[in-house]
Length: 541
Image 1 (spheres, rainbow, N blue to C red):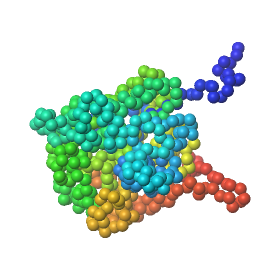
Image 2 (image 1 turned 180 degrees about the vertical axis):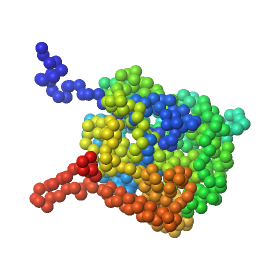
Image 3 (image 1 turned 60 degrees about the vertical axis):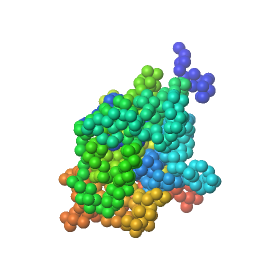
Image 4 (image 1 turned 90 degrees about the vertical axis):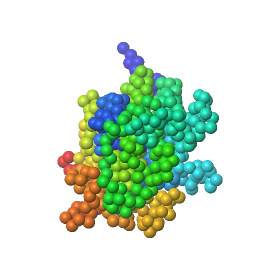
Protein backbone atom coordinates (compact mmCIF):
# COMPACT_ATOMS: atom_id res chain seq x y z
CA UNK A 1 0.00 0.00 0.00
CA UNK A 2 1.37 3.38 -0.98
CA UNK A 3 2.20 5.98 1.63
CA UNK A 4 0.23 8.92 0.25
CA UNK A 5 1.33 11.20 3.10
CA UNK A 6 4.98 11.08 2.05
CA UNK A 7 4.37 12.34 -1.52
CA UNK A 8 8.01 11.79 -2.48
CA UNK A 9 7.77 13.37 -5.91
CA UNK A 10 6.10 16.59 -4.86
CA UNK A 11 8.16 19.78 -4.44
CA UNK A 12 8.68 20.90 -0.85
CA UNK A 13 6.78 24.18 -1.29
CA UNK A 14 3.62 22.33 -2.34
CA UNK A 15 3.38 20.33 0.90
CA UNK A 16 0.97 21.77 3.42
CA UNK A 17 2.82 23.26 6.38
CA UNK A 18 1.90 22.50 9.95
CA UNK A 19 -0.51 25.13 11.24
CA UNK A 20 1.22 27.43 13.71
CA UNK A 21 -0.36 30.80 14.41
CA UNK A 22 0.54 33.42 17.00
CA UNK A 23 -1.87 35.83 18.70
CA UNK A 24 0.26 38.24 20.75
CA UNK A 25 -1.99 40.49 22.87
CA UNK A 26 -1.04 43.49 24.97
CA UNK A 27 -3.48 45.51 27.07
CA UNK A 28 -1.86 48.81 28.05
CA UNK A 29 -1.29 49.66 31.72
CA UNK A 30 -2.79 46.47 33.21
CA UNK A 31 -1.79 45.76 36.82
CA UNK A 32 -0.54 42.27 37.52
CA UNK A 33 -3.00 41.70 40.39
CA UNK A 34 -6.10 42.48 38.30
CA UNK A 35 -7.37 39.07 37.20
CA UNK A 36 -10.30 37.17 38.61
CA UNK A 37 -8.44 33.84 38.44
CA UNK A 38 -5.82 34.99 40.94
CA UNK A 39 -8.40 36.17 43.44
CA UNK A 40 -8.83 39.87 42.80
CA UNK A 41 -11.66 40.98 45.13
CA UNK A 42 -13.50 43.06 42.53
CA UNK A 43 -12.58 42.88 38.85
CA UNK A 44 -14.22 40.19 36.70
CA UNK A 45 -12.19 38.76 33.80
CA UNK A 46 -14.04 35.55 32.82
CA UNK A 47 -12.50 35.17 29.37
CA UNK A 48 -8.93 35.68 30.55
CA UNK A 49 -9.66 33.28 33.39
CA UNK A 50 -10.70 30.63 30.82
CA UNK A 51 -7.55 31.32 28.79
CA UNK A 52 -5.46 30.82 31.92
CA UNK A 53 -7.15 27.44 32.48
CA UNK A 54 -6.11 26.40 28.98
CA UNK A 55 -2.56 27.67 29.44
CA UNK A 56 -0.14 28.83 32.12
CA UNK A 57 -0.39 31.96 34.28
CA UNK A 58 2.84 33.52 35.53
CA UNK A 59 2.08 35.19 38.85
CA UNK A 60 5.46 36.85 39.39
CA UNK A 61 5.84 38.53 36.04
CA UNK A 62 7.46 41.96 35.75
CA UNK A 63 8.15 44.50 33.05
CA UNK A 64 11.70 45.81 32.58
CA UNK A 65 11.01 49.54 32.65
CA UNK A 66 8.38 52.26 32.23
CA UNK A 67 6.64 54.08 30.55
CA UNK A 68 5.09 52.62 27.36
CA UNK A 69 7.84 53.14 24.76
CA UNK A 70 10.76 51.83 26.86
CA UNK A 71 8.68 48.94 28.25
CA UNK A 72 7.66 47.87 24.76
CA UNK A 73 11.24 48.18 23.53
CA UNK A 74 12.19 45.51 26.09
CA UNK A 75 9.14 43.40 25.24
CA UNK A 76 9.86 43.42 21.50
CA UNK A 77 13.67 43.12 21.61
CA UNK A 78 14.12 40.80 24.59
CA UNK A 79 16.63 43.29 26.00
CA UNK A 80 16.98 44.97 29.36
CA UNK A 81 16.66 48.75 29.27
CA UNK A 82 20.36 49.07 30.13
CA UNK A 83 21.07 47.43 26.76
CA UNK A 84 18.50 48.88 24.37
CA UNK A 85 18.69 52.36 25.99
CA UNK A 86 15.35 53.61 24.67
CA UNK A 87 14.72 54.95 28.16
CA UNK A 88 11.84 57.44 27.77
CA UNK A 89 8.88 57.85 25.44
CA UNK A 90 10.50 59.45 22.42
CA UNK A 91 14.02 58.15 23.04
CA UNK A 92 15.15 56.51 19.76
CA UNK A 93 15.49 52.74 19.60
CA UNK A 94 18.84 51.87 18.04
CA UNK A 95 18.25 50.34 14.61
CA UNK A 96 20.97 47.72 15.15
CA UNK A 97 18.78 45.73 17.54
CA UNK A 98 16.79 42.74 16.50
CA UNK A 99 13.14 42.34 17.46
CA UNK A 100 10.30 39.83 17.43
CA UNK A 101 8.86 41.08 14.12
CA UNK A 102 12.14 40.82 12.22
CA UNK A 103 12.79 37.37 13.64
CA UNK A 104 9.42 35.81 12.80
CA UNK A 105 9.79 37.04 9.23
CA UNK A 106 12.69 34.61 8.93
CA UNK A 107 10.15 31.84 9.56
CA UNK A 108 7.87 33.03 6.76
CA UNK A 109 5.42 35.10 8.82
CA UNK A 110 4.17 38.59 8.04
CA UNK A 111 3.70 39.94 11.59
CA UNK A 112 0.71 42.28 11.48
CA UNK A 113 -0.12 44.97 14.01
CA UNK A 114 -3.54 46.08 15.21
CA UNK A 115 -2.88 49.01 17.53
CA UNK A 116 0.56 50.46 18.23
CA UNK A 117 4.09 49.66 19.40
CA UNK A 118 5.28 53.14 20.55
CA UNK A 119 8.65 52.80 18.83
CA UNK A 120 10.81 55.90 18.42
CA UNK A 121 12.78 55.70 15.18
CA UNK A 122 16.57 55.89 14.98
CA UNK A 123 17.23 59.41 13.59
CA UNK A 124 20.50 58.30 12.00
CA UNK A 125 18.50 56.22 9.52
CA UNK A 126 16.25 59.08 8.40
CA UNK A 127 16.31 62.51 6.79
CA UNK A 128 15.92 65.25 9.38
CA UNK A 129 12.55 66.23 7.90
CA UNK A 130 11.11 62.72 8.04
CA UNK A 131 7.75 62.78 9.91
CA UNK A 132 8.82 59.73 11.92
CA UNK A 133 11.10 62.07 13.86
CA UNK A 134 8.09 64.02 15.14
CA UNK A 135 6.48 61.14 17.06
CA UNK A 136 7.32 58.44 19.58
CA UNK A 137 4.56 56.26 18.13
CA UNK A 138 6.32 54.64 15.22
CA UNK A 139 6.00 50.94 14.42
CA UNK A 140 8.70 48.46 15.38
CA UNK A 141 10.80 47.58 12.30
CA UNK A 142 9.52 44.50 10.50
CA UNK A 143 5.91 44.85 11.65
CA UNK A 144 3.19 45.27 9.02
CA UNK A 145 0.16 47.38 9.83
CA UNK A 146 -3.35 45.97 9.84
CA UNK A 147 -4.64 49.05 11.65
CA UNK A 148 -2.34 51.57 13.30
CA UNK A 149 -4.12 53.21 16.22
CA UNK A 150 -1.86 55.75 17.92
CA UNK A 151 -2.76 58.70 20.17
CA UNK A 152 -4.48 60.51 17.31
CA UNK A 153 -6.93 57.56 17.03
CA UNK A 154 -7.68 58.54 13.43
CA UNK A 155 -8.88 55.20 12.03
CA UNK A 156 -11.28 54.79 14.94
CA UNK A 157 -12.51 58.41 14.92
CA UNK A 158 -13.08 58.36 11.15
CA UNK A 159 -15.08 55.16 11.67
CA UNK A 160 -17.16 56.90 14.37
CA UNK A 161 -17.89 59.78 12.00
CA UNK A 162 -18.93 57.35 9.26
CA UNK A 163 -21.46 55.93 11.74
CA UNK A 164 -23.03 59.32 12.35
CA UNK A 165 -21.07 60.72 15.29
CA UNK A 166 -20.35 64.44 15.44
CA UNK A 167 -17.86 65.46 12.75
CA UNK A 168 -16.11 67.78 15.21
CA UNK A 169 -14.80 64.78 17.21
CA UNK A 170 -11.03 64.58 17.54
CA UNK A 171 -8.53 62.68 19.66
CA UNK A 172 -8.92 65.20 22.49
CA UNK A 173 -12.72 65.45 22.64
CA UNK A 174 -13.56 61.79 21.96
CA UNK A 175 -12.77 61.01 25.61
CA UNK A 176 -14.78 63.90 27.07
CA UNK A 177 -17.68 62.82 29.32
CA UNK A 178 -21.25 63.17 28.10
CA UNK A 179 -22.41 66.58 29.33
CA UNK A 180 -26.04 65.47 29.74
CA UNK A 181 -25.31 62.38 31.82
CA UNK A 182 -27.24 62.38 35.11
CA UNK A 183 -25.20 62.66 38.30
CA UNK A 184 -25.40 59.85 40.80
CA UNK A 185 -24.79 59.89 44.55
CA UNK A 186 -21.64 58.08 45.59
CA UNK A 187 -20.05 58.40 42.17
CA UNK A 188 -16.88 60.33 41.41
CA UNK A 189 -15.58 62.42 38.52
CA UNK A 190 -14.78 59.55 36.09
CA UNK A 191 -18.27 58.00 36.31
CA UNK A 192 -19.89 59.66 33.27
CA UNK A 193 -19.50 57.68 30.02
CA UNK A 194 -18.18 59.11 26.74
CA UNK A 195 -20.32 59.96 23.72
CA UNK A 196 -19.66 56.60 22.05
CA UNK A 197 -21.34 53.31 22.98
CA UNK A 198 -19.65 50.08 23.98
CA UNK A 199 -20.29 48.72 20.46
CA UNK A 200 -18.41 51.70 19.05
CA UNK A 201 -15.46 51.93 21.47
CA UNK A 202 -11.85 51.74 20.33
CA UNK A 203 -11.67 48.25 21.86
CA UNK A 204 -14.69 47.13 19.82
CA UNK A 205 -13.31 48.79 16.66
CA UNK A 206 -9.91 47.12 16.94
CA UNK A 207 -11.48 43.75 17.74
CA UNK A 208 -13.74 43.95 14.67
CA UNK A 209 -10.78 44.88 12.46
CA UNK A 210 -8.79 41.88 13.71
CA UNK A 211 -11.70 39.51 13.13
CA UNK A 212 -12.20 40.82 9.59
CA UNK A 213 -8.49 40.37 8.85
CA UNK A 214 -8.44 36.83 10.24
CA UNK A 215 -11.60 35.80 8.37
CA UNK A 216 -9.77 35.74 5.01
CA UNK A 217 -6.62 34.03 6.30
CA UNK A 218 -7.98 30.80 7.73
CA UNK A 219 -5.75 28.69 5.45
CA UNK A 220 -2.57 30.64 6.23
CA UNK A 221 -0.08 30.68 9.04
CA UNK A 222 -0.37 34.13 10.61
CA UNK A 223 1.14 36.28 13.35
CA UNK A 224 -1.08 39.00 14.84
CA UNK A 225 -0.04 41.56 17.43
CA UNK A 226 -3.25 42.91 18.97
CA UNK A 227 -2.28 45.97 21.01
CA UNK A 228 -5.22 47.46 22.93
CA UNK A 229 -4.93 50.93 24.46
CA UNK A 230 -7.24 50.10 27.35
CA UNK A 231 -7.23 50.25 30.37
CA UNK A 232 -4.77 53.12 29.77
CA UNK A 233 -6.15 56.56 30.76
CA UNK A 234 -7.99 58.80 30.31
CA UNK A 235 -10.26 56.75 32.52
CA UNK A 236 -13.70 56.98 30.96
CA UNK A 237 -15.71 53.84 30.19
CA UNK A 238 -18.74 53.41 27.92
CA UNK A 239 -21.99 52.07 29.30
CA UNK A 240 -22.48 49.57 30.92
CA UNK A 241 -18.84 49.40 32.02
CA UNK A 242 -18.91 52.85 33.62
CA UNK A 243 -21.35 51.58 36.27
CA UNK A 244 -20.22 47.95 36.48
CA UNK A 245 -18.31 48.49 39.73
CA UNK A 246 -19.32 50.50 42.78
CA UNK A 247 -16.69 52.87 44.23
CA UNK A 248 -17.86 51.90 47.73
CA UNK A 249 -16.72 48.31 47.03
CA UNK A 250 -13.24 49.24 45.85
CA UNK A 251 -10.14 48.11 47.75
CA UNK A 252 -8.59 51.11 49.48
CA UNK A 253 -5.22 52.38 48.24
CA UNK A 254 -2.01 51.26 49.91
CA UNK A 255 -0.56 54.47 51.30
CA UNK A 256 0.35 56.39 54.42
CA UNK A 257 -2.00 58.74 56.24
CA UNK A 258 -0.91 61.83 54.35
CA UNK A 259 0.78 62.83 51.12
CA UNK A 260 3.43 64.69 53.09
CA UNK A 261 4.28 61.66 55.21
CA UNK A 262 4.49 59.43 52.11
CA UNK A 263 6.78 61.90 50.36
CA UNK A 264 9.34 61.72 53.16
CA UNK A 265 10.41 58.27 52.02
CA UNK A 266 12.65 59.62 49.24
CA UNK A 267 13.12 62.89 47.31
CA UNK A 268 12.36 61.13 44.02
CA UNK A 269 8.98 60.00 45.37
CA UNK A 270 8.16 63.49 46.59
CA UNK A 271 8.94 64.89 43.14
CA UNK A 272 6.85 62.24 41.40
CA UNK A 273 3.90 63.32 43.56
CA UNK A 274 4.17 66.77 41.98
CA UNK A 275 4.77 65.63 38.42
CA UNK A 276 1.57 64.27 36.87
CA UNK A 277 -1.60 66.37 36.49
CA UNK A 278 -5.03 65.01 37.32
CA UNK A 279 -6.17 65.75 33.77
CA UNK A 280 -3.92 62.98 32.44
CA UNK A 281 -6.31 60.53 34.08
CA UNK A 282 -9.71 62.27 34.39
CA UNK A 283 -11.08 64.60 31.75
CA UNK A 284 -12.62 67.14 34.14
CA UNK A 285 -9.83 69.67 33.55
CA UNK A 286 -9.17 70.41 37.22
CA UNK A 287 -5.77 72.04 37.60
CA UNK A 288 -4.10 70.03 40.36
CA UNK A 289 -1.63 67.13 40.75
CA UNK A 290 -3.20 63.69 40.54
CA UNK A 291 -1.66 62.90 43.94
CA UNK A 292 -4.14 65.28 45.58
CA UNK A 293 -7.23 63.52 44.21
CA UNK A 294 -10.01 63.27 46.80
CA UNK A 295 -11.09 59.88 48.16
CA UNK A 296 -14.33 59.56 46.20
CA UNK A 297 -12.71 60.41 42.87
CA UNK A 298 -9.87 57.99 43.64
CA UNK A 299 -12.25 55.11 44.36
CA UNK A 300 -14.25 55.99 41.25
CA UNK A 301 -11.17 55.88 39.00
CA UNK A 302 -10.49 52.43 40.41
CA UNK A 303 -14.04 51.39 39.51
CA UNK A 304 -13.69 52.90 36.03
CA UNK A 305 -10.29 51.26 35.52
CA UNK A 306 -11.74 47.87 36.39
CA UNK A 307 -14.66 48.55 34.05
CA UNK A 308 -12.24 49.16 31.19
CA UNK A 309 -10.54 45.87 32.02
CA UNK A 310 -13.84 44.04 31.83
CA UNK A 311 -14.51 45.71 28.49
CA UNK A 312 -11.21 44.40 27.10
CA UNK A 313 -11.96 40.96 28.54
CA UNK A 314 -15.38 40.88 26.86
CA UNK A 315 -13.93 41.67 23.44
CA UNK A 316 -11.05 39.24 23.84
CA UNK A 317 -13.73 36.64 24.40
CA UNK A 318 -14.99 37.32 20.86
CA UNK A 319 -11.53 36.72 19.41
CA UNK A 320 -11.07 33.47 21.33
CA UNK A 321 -14.56 32.33 20.32
CA UNK A 322 -13.74 32.97 16.66
CA UNK A 323 -10.51 30.95 16.92
CA UNK A 324 -12.41 28.03 18.42
CA UNK A 325 -15.29 28.14 15.94
CA UNK A 326 -12.91 28.39 12.96
CA UNK A 327 -10.82 25.46 14.20
CA UNK A 328 -7.70 27.57 14.77
CA UNK A 329 -7.53 27.62 18.58
CA UNK A 330 -5.66 24.30 18.63
CA UNK A 331 -2.95 25.67 16.34
CA UNK A 332 -2.52 29.13 17.87
CA UNK A 333 -0.10 30.25 20.55
CA UNK A 334 -1.95 32.92 22.56
CA UNK A 335 0.06 35.34 24.68
CA UNK A 336 -1.65 37.92 26.89
CA UNK A 337 0.40 40.52 28.74
CA UNK A 338 0.86 44.27 29.29
CA UNK A 339 3.62 46.80 28.80
CA UNK A 340 3.54 48.00 32.43
CA UNK A 341 1.31 48.39 35.47
CA UNK A 342 -0.58 51.21 37.19
CA UNK A 343 -0.41 52.62 40.72
CA UNK A 344 -4.12 53.57 41.06
CA UNK A 345 -3.41 55.88 43.99
CA UNK A 346 -1.14 53.48 45.88
CA UNK A 347 1.57 55.57 47.58
CA UNK A 348 -0.36 58.61 46.21
CA UNK A 349 0.89 57.77 42.72
CA UNK A 350 -0.92 57.32 39.44
CA UNK A 351 0.42 55.99 36.17
CA UNK A 352 3.70 54.20 35.59
CA UNK A 353 6.79 55.66 37.20
CA UNK A 354 9.09 55.29 40.18
CA UNK A 355 10.11 52.03 41.83
CA UNK A 356 7.07 50.46 43.54
CA UNK A 357 5.82 47.04 42.40
CA UNK A 358 2.45 48.39 41.22
CA UNK A 359 4.05 50.04 38.17
CA UNK A 360 6.04 46.95 37.13
CA UNK A 361 4.09 43.84 38.12
CA UNK A 362 2.08 42.81 35.03
CA UNK A 363 0.03 39.81 33.89
CA UNK A 364 1.32 37.05 31.62
CA UNK A 365 -0.83 34.20 30.32
CA UNK A 366 0.57 31.86 27.67
CA UNK A 367 -1.71 29.29 26.02
CA UNK A 368 0.33 26.71 24.13
CA UNK A 369 -2.00 24.36 22.24
CA UNK A 370 0.77 21.75 22.08
CA UNK A 371 1.21 21.62 25.86
CA UNK A 372 0.28 18.44 27.70
CA UNK A 373 -3.05 18.48 29.52
CA UNK A 374 -1.55 17.92 32.97
CA UNK A 375 0.17 21.31 32.84
CA UNK A 376 -2.84 23.32 31.70
CA UNK A 377 -4.25 25.71 34.26
CA UNK A 378 -1.02 25.88 36.26
CA UNK A 379 -0.17 29.17 37.97
CA UNK A 380 3.60 29.40 38.31
CA UNK A 381 5.26 31.22 41.22
CA UNK A 382 8.66 31.80 39.61
CA UNK A 383 10.10 35.16 38.59
CA UNK A 384 9.61 35.91 34.91
CA UNK A 385 10.19 39.11 32.97
CA UNK A 386 8.97 40.83 29.81
CA UNK A 387 12.23 39.95 28.07
CA UNK A 388 11.15 36.27 28.18
CA UNK A 389 8.19 36.77 25.83
CA UNK A 390 10.17 37.13 22.58
CA UNK A 391 12.31 33.99 23.19
CA UNK A 392 9.18 32.03 24.15
CA UNK A 393 7.39 32.87 20.91
CA UNK A 394 10.47 32.11 18.80
CA UNK A 395 11.05 28.83 20.64
CA UNK A 396 7.45 27.77 19.95
CA UNK A 397 7.94 28.55 16.26
CA UNK A 398 11.15 26.46 16.23
CA UNK A 399 13.06 29.61 15.33
CA UNK A 400 16.53 30.57 16.50
CA UNK A 401 16.68 32.91 19.49
CA UNK A 402 19.15 35.76 18.87
CA UNK A 403 22.26 35.62 21.04
CA UNK A 404 21.74 39.24 22.11
CA UNK A 405 18.48 38.38 23.92
CA UNK A 406 18.59 38.85 27.69
CA UNK A 407 15.47 36.74 28.22
CA UNK A 408 14.85 33.00 28.07
CA UNK A 409 12.08 30.81 26.69
CA UNK A 410 9.31 29.92 29.12
CA UNK A 411 8.33 26.72 27.31
CA UNK A 412 10.38 24.44 29.61
CA UNK A 413 8.66 25.98 32.64
CA UNK A 414 5.27 25.53 31.01
CA UNK A 415 6.04 21.86 30.42
CA UNK A 416 6.90 21.24 34.05
CA UNK A 417 10.67 21.77 34.09
CA UNK A 418 12.08 24.74 35.96
CA UNK A 419 15.80 24.95 35.14
CA UNK A 420 18.09 24.92 38.15
CA UNK A 421 19.71 28.12 36.90
CA UNK A 422 16.42 30.01 36.55
CA UNK A 423 16.42 33.53 38.00
CA UNK A 424 15.38 33.96 41.63
CA UNK A 425 14.53 37.65 41.41
CA UNK A 426 13.10 40.31 39.12
CA UNK A 427 14.92 43.36 37.80
CA UNK A 428 13.69 46.66 36.45
CA UNK A 429 14.89 50.16 35.70
CA UNK A 430 13.44 53.65 35.65
CA UNK A 431 14.99 56.63 33.91
CA UNK A 432 13.68 60.02 35.00
CA UNK A 433 15.80 62.28 32.80
CA UNK A 434 12.62 63.22 30.86
CA UNK A 435 14.37 65.09 28.07
CA UNK A 436 11.99 67.49 26.31
CA UNK A 437 9.28 67.47 28.99
CA UNK A 438 10.16 67.74 32.69
CA UNK A 439 13.94 68.04 32.42
CA UNK A 440 14.09 71.63 33.79
CA UNK A 441 12.08 70.50 36.84
CA UNK A 442 14.36 67.52 37.42
CA UNK A 443 17.45 69.72 37.18
CA UNK A 444 15.90 72.21 39.59
CA UNK A 445 14.93 69.53 42.13
CA UNK A 446 18.09 67.46 42.15
CA UNK A 447 20.82 69.36 40.32
CA UNK A 448 21.57 66.20 38.33
CA UNK A 449 22.68 65.78 34.74
CA UNK A 450 20.39 63.65 32.56
CA UNK A 451 22.79 60.69 32.78
CA UNK A 452 22.52 60.73 36.57
CA UNK A 453 18.73 60.44 36.53
CA UNK A 454 18.20 56.69 36.77
CA UNK A 455 17.47 53.92 39.20
CA UNK A 456 17.66 50.14 39.11
CA UNK A 457 15.74 47.57 41.16
CA UNK A 458 16.42 44.00 42.23
CA UNK A 459 13.50 42.29 43.97
CA UNK A 460 13.12 38.75 45.29
CA UNK A 461 10.77 37.22 47.86
CA UNK A 462 12.70 38.66 50.80
CA UNK A 463 14.09 42.08 49.98
CA UNK A 464 13.84 44.81 47.40
CA UNK A 465 16.87 47.01 46.76
CA UNK A 466 16.64 50.23 44.74
CA UNK A 467 19.93 51.72 43.60
CA UNK A 468 20.03 55.30 42.35
CA UNK A 469 22.84 56.58 40.13
CA UNK A 470 23.37 59.76 42.14
CA UNK A 471 20.81 59.71 44.98
CA UNK A 472 20.45 57.63 48.16
CA UNK A 473 19.30 54.00 47.75
CA UNK A 474 16.28 52.24 49.26
CA UNK A 475 15.88 48.83 50.85
CA UNK A 476 12.58 47.18 51.79
CA UNK A 477 12.08 44.07 53.90
CA UNK A 478 9.24 42.52 51.90
CA UNK A 479 8.49 39.78 54.42
CA UNK A 480 7.78 42.27 57.21
CA UNK A 481 6.88 45.33 55.11
CA UNK A 482 5.17 44.13 51.91
CA UNK A 483 3.64 47.59 51.34
CA UNK A 484 7.16 49.10 51.05
CA UNK A 485 6.70 51.84 53.62
CA UNK A 486 9.99 51.62 55.58
CA UNK A 487 13.30 52.36 53.86
CA UNK A 488 16.01 50.38 55.67
CA UNK A 489 18.94 51.33 53.44
CA UNK A 490 20.64 53.39 56.15
CA UNK A 491 19.63 51.19 59.10
CA UNK A 492 22.77 49.76 60.77
CA UNK A 493 21.21 46.29 61.14
CA UNK A 494 20.71 45.98 57.39
CA UNK A 495 24.08 47.09 56.00
CA UNK A 496 25.07 43.51 55.16
CA UNK A 497 21.83 43.14 53.19
CA UNK A 498 22.54 46.36 51.27
CA UNK A 499 26.03 45.09 50.38
CA UNK A 500 24.67 41.68 49.38
CA UNK A 501 21.95 43.03 47.11
CA UNK A 502 24.08 45.75 45.56
CA UNK A 503 26.59 43.00 44.76
CA UNK A 504 23.83 40.91 43.17
CA UNK A 505 22.82 43.90 41.09
CA UNK A 506 26.40 44.43 39.91
CA UNK A 507 26.71 40.75 38.95
CA UNK A 508 23.39 40.92 37.07
CA UNK A 509 24.62 43.99 35.19
CA UNK A 510 27.92 42.33 34.27
CA UNK A 511 26.26 39.07 33.19
CA UNK A 512 23.86 40.82 30.83
CA UNK A 513 26.27 43.08 29.02
CA UNK A 514 25.89 43.05 25.24
CA UNK A 515 27.37 39.84 23.87
CA UNK A 516 26.52 40.20 20.18
CA UNK A 517 30.16 39.72 19.08
CA UNK A 518 31.99 38.94 22.29
CA UNK A 519 31.83 35.13 21.90
CA UNK A 520 33.51 35.25 18.49
CA UNK A 521 37.27 35.08 18.04
CA UNK A 522 39.63 34.78 15.07
CA UNK A 523 43.04 34.67 16.80
CA UNK A 524 43.57 31.05 15.71
CA UNK A 525 43.18 31.98 12.05
CA UNK A 526 39.61 30.72 11.79
CA UNK A 527 36.41 32.19 13.16
CA UNK A 528 35.52 30.51 16.42
CA UNK A 529 31.97 31.18 17.55
CA UNK A 530 30.69 29.84 20.88
CA UNK A 531 26.95 29.73 21.35
CA UNK A 532 25.20 28.88 24.58
CA UNK A 533 23.28 30.13 27.60
CA UNK A 534 24.57 32.96 29.77
CA UNK A 535 24.59 30.59 32.75
CA UNK A 536 25.23 26.84 32.70
CA UNK A 537 23.08 24.41 34.64
CA UNK A 538 24.71 23.51 37.97
CA UNK A 539 26.86 20.32 37.95
CA UNK A 540 24.85 17.12 38.45
CA UNK A 541 21.60 19.05 38.03
